[in-house]
Image (cartoon, protein in one colour):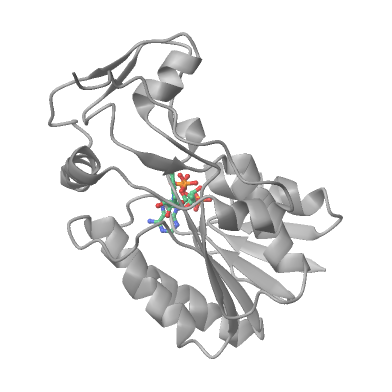
Length: 231
Ligand SMILES: NC(=O)c1ccc[n+]([C@@H]2O[C@H](COP(=O)([O-])OP(=O)(O)OC[C@H]3O[C@@H](n4cnc5c(N)ncnc54)[C@H](OP(=O)(O)O)[C@@H]3O)[C@@H](O)[C@H]2O)c1
């Protein structure tokens, strides 16, 4: 089996390529300007915070159709229709394009990666450290990607993916680190600040059952937090 992976040279792509190659799949990461070529399937990854993800995805879907690739798995995000976060909304629109592409599709919606946090040092984030998230272990997301690409029965499915429910404070405490909210703006740009403002108010809860089922393991760990019990 041959799978092409547009965006496959980034953090997510390297994990997906590794999981596919571990299953003896020929996994071909594609960078900017690379054409898909003949393949059984594509795993489509847009770069983080792309300014026009629907246009990028539309172009990639055209390229896949032109190459005769009939199966696509799109790497989206948990809660894509969150209009307060422009990059999530871009993924919601891109999901619609994927569903109407005429290709056989599957959509994965991972929560924030556990690997985003460096727990070896004091953790400083510009949002409430007690906000609840469904964090996704990138290695498990990559396993799920390989599963839906190589096994039947996932066509037309949209799966939200989280490995565990936790807070930044809880994860830091587990690792023996401290967690602190720092004031914004983050310096990373308005879309990041919009995301952090959303995280601050709502966190990003994501169910854990789907990923557990895809990986064939039991339910994930419950909440992890050090929030003091109110008097
Ligand atoms: N981080 C998380 O917690 C998380 C959670 C859920 C979903 N996601 C989503 O996962 C996706 C991948 O994130 P990532 O951090 O792994 O990706 P990334 O490293 O930012 O980008 C992936 C690849 O995209 C290519 N690229 C960069 N700019 C481009 C452009 N303007 N046009 C076309 N291609 C371009 C680059 O490859 P070349 O240089 O080889 O062209 C890059 O290696 C993002 O869409 C993100 O929203 C992330």
